[in-house]
Image (cartoon, rainbow, N blue to C red):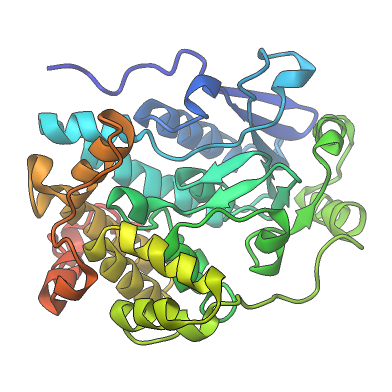
Length: 374
C-alpha cells in the first residue's frame, strides 16, 4: 500500500535565531496546504522548543508562491490554505488509516498551539483558511495585513469548520461565528480585527523587518517577550472593541431553514446573496456546523476538539467511500472540478434532526478517545 506519511522534503523549515524559534511553511505551489508529514514536523519543532530554555518565543509564517526560500520576495504573501484536501479524497477512497492519523495529530497540534507556554506569533499574510486558521488562532499575537484572506470554507466541500473552529468561531461577537461557519465567506484584515480573529494589522511591507527584529533582539525571558509585544508591537495598533456582523438577526435564528428564509425574504440585496450562497453549501453540513458552533460556545477547547474529532470521523465513515458529503464535495471542487456536488440530502428542507445528531455520537468511549489526553 502507498505510504501517505512521506517526508516533507523541506515543506516545513525551522531555525532558531537569537532566542526565537522560526517556522516557515514552505509548500508554496500548494498554498502551503498541510500534509500529515508537515503536521508531524510542526508538532516535533514545537515540542522540542516547549521546554528549551534557549527558545523564548516562536514565530510562524508561510512562504510565497512567487519567491524562492531565502529570498526577500519568498518571505511572506501566503500563510496556509488549510489541509491537503486531495490527500483527504485519495486516502478516504483507499481506506487508508493515515486519514485518521492526520486529523488526530492535527487537532493535537492545534491544542498545543493554543496552550503553548511561550509567546507564539502568527504572521497571517495572504491566504489563511481552514487548517491555516488552526495554526494561527491559538497564537499570542495574530498579525494580519492588507493581503489577508481569511475563511473557514469547509461547508463548501461538505465538511465543517474544524481545527478548533467551533471554539474560536463561537467566541466571535454576536452571531458572527454562525455566519462564518455556515457561509465559509472570505473576510479581510479589518473584519478579522472586528470579529476578534486577529490582534494587529500591519502593512505587508513591515513584516520582513519585524521577522528579522525578533531574531536580533535580546530578551531576558519569555515574560520580557510578552512585555515587548504589549508595548512595542500591539500598543496603539489593537482595536479596543469587537463588532457584530450585519447579518446577526438572521444567523441568531434557531434553525438553518429559518436563517435562509429570513435572508431570502430580506429587501437587502447583500442578504439575498448570502441566502443564495447557503443554498450552494452542503445542506447536511450546514446543520452539523450550526450544531457544532452552538455546542462549542459552552465548551473548553479540549472538549471542542474531541467533539470535532468525532464529527470528522463520521464525515468519512458514516457513509463510507464516495457516498459521504466530504468526499463528494472535494470531488466536485478539487478533483473533477465540475463544481456541481450531488449533496445528500439535496435541500436544506430535507435534513432531518437525526441526520445531524448522528455526527455527534462519539464512536469511542471516553477512555479510548484518540484525544483523551488533551
